Amino acid sequence: MQIIQKVRCPNCGSEGERHYILESQIQRTQCPACDYLMIMCTHTGRVIEAYAPGIALRK
Image (cartoon, rainbow, N blue to C red):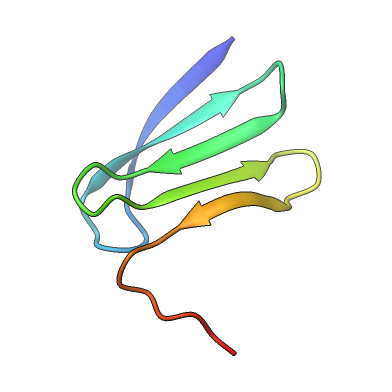
């Protein structure tokens, strides 16, 4: 089962989507306006994959 929720993009503020994929305990947040993507495990909270154009990588 999958639940889709409308959210504001944390990168640009545009309207994005958050997909909860219950079988695999995955949460995917994506924004079509700026190409933001974050995939994380809902059980552990760990980030599996992330892409945020325009956000500088901290060192």
